[in-house]
Structure formats: structure tokens, C-alpha cells
Image 1: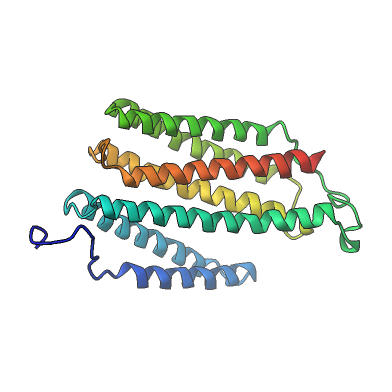
Image 2: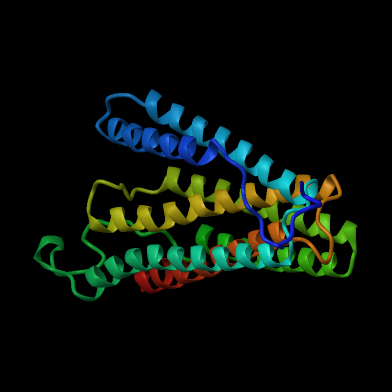
Length: 263
């Protein structure tokens, strides 16, 4: 049937993953509510495991479409790139809301927080210790993912895999340092608006780093299997775009929250 197709578009087959993933996201939402009210964490864990299983199945089907059914034509790849650009724009708006809240309270502190920013009795995290180290790690990861991409364009498979592996490793090192920072800070999410904004912005960024690391890890496993060529690597390319977006967001977080906010 694929040989008789008279167009360059990909008409997707019926798939259970959209509806199952939606149900899993709903379970996660309910689980978060129950967890925040200290009722139970079992529902949240079930939702997370379910969404991970859906992601694995969905990725598997997409990889099969690209590598074995050869459905990802030039036009399809263009659509995937446009979709990723629109997704990144939505992510920019998502983080813009956190920055809006931060600047609203930092530039115009009100009576609720004592008309000063940061609020009293806040022990700020030192700018040029762990946050600065994490900044260097993410900047380095931006160079390794660029090296990996360039190596692939030059058909250097070894350099492609090495750069990709280093990027994934730097991503997980970043997350480990951030977890260590969280465990040793005196700032609490529930204490005041500063703690809420701090953990929402940096925590969601850490979540994005985790997602990006998983995406690039999948790309690395695919690279080992011989997937991706210099002319056909849209899956890796959009993963690299996402990683660069994560890098840029962290630079804004570091400058405004850790540096400017501590001055």
C-alpha cells in the first residue's frame, strides 16, 4: 500500500496512544491533588507510570513509521519542524508567566510581603556556587549537542554519538546538582511568594531538563542502532532545538532570579 501512495503526506493510522495518554494525564492531575492534600501518592505514581508507558509506545510507533515504513517524507519532516517551533513558542509563554509573577512582586512589592524584595528572613542561595556551576554545565551541554549535530552533518558517526552521550550525561548531572541544592536550601515552597515562584520556575525548568535528557537518551539509543543520517534526522534535530531552548531559559533564570534577585 505504501508503494501505491500518490502523495508525500503521512496519513496516520488509528492509534490508542492519544486517548490513553489523555487519561493518564487526567490520572496525574487527580493524583497531584490527592498528593498535595496529603491523602495518598499511589494515584500520582500510577499516573506517572502510565504516561511513561504511553510515551514509550508512542515513540516506538513513530520510530517505526520513520525508519521502517519510510513515511517521514520531506513534507512530513517540514510539518514536524513547524510543530516543534509552535510547541517551543507555547513553552516560552509558559515560562513568561513565571517571570511576570517574579517581576511583579520584585519590582512592586506590596504590604503582604512587607514592601521589600526578597521578603524578610529569606536565606538566599549563593549565586556563584551551585547555580553558577549548573550554568556552566548547561552552557557546555549546548556546545556538545551542537558538536553532535555538526558531526552528524559531516557523517561522523563516532563524534555524533560522543557529543550526544556527553549532552545526556551533563543533563543528568545538572539534575543531580539541582536536587542537592533543593535538599540543602532553607527556602520552602509554602513559606511565601518568593519560595513559590522560585520552586515553580526552577522546578519546572528542571522538569524540562529531565524531559530533554530523556529525549536525547532515546536519540542516543537510536544512534547506536544506526538511525539518523545527515539528510534524515528530524527526530534528533527537534530534540536539539528543545535542548537549546532549555539552555536559554536557564540563562534567564540564573541572571534574574539567582544573580539580579540576590543583589
